[in-house]
Image 1 (cartoon, rainbow, N blue to C red):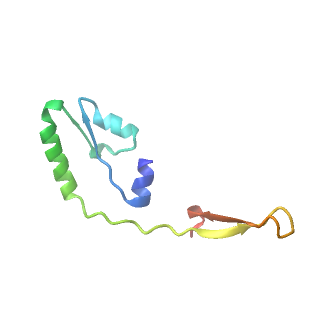
Image 2 (tube, rainbow, N blue to C red; image 1 turned 135 degrees about the vertical axis):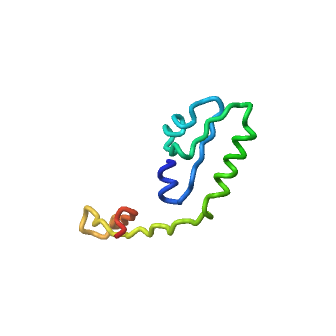
Image 3 (spheres, rainbow, N blue to C red; image 1 turned 180 degrees about the horizontal axis):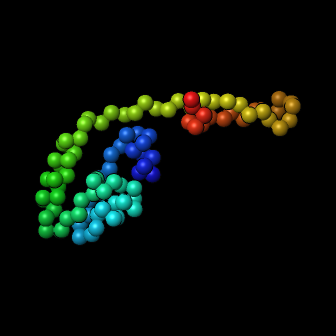
Length: 95
C-alpha cells in the first residue's frame, strides 16, 4: 500500500519508532531506511525536532497527474445485444 501511494499519488512516508529498530520495522512496511528514525522514549522532543527539519526540507507536495484509463469493450458471449458488452477500463491499458 505504501509503495502504491508513493508511486501513484506522490506521497512520502516517515516512520518513527520509540525503543525499537525503526529501520527494520519501517522496511517491513515498505518505508525506505532513510525515512525511518529510531529514538528512545526520553528523547522524543529531539526526534520530533529532527523530523520537523526533514519535513521542512522536503520540496512542496505536488500531486501527480492522474492516470487516465483507456477503455475498450469486450464482446459479449452472445451475438445479440443482450447482455451488453462489458466495458474494460484499466490504467495498465494506458499507452
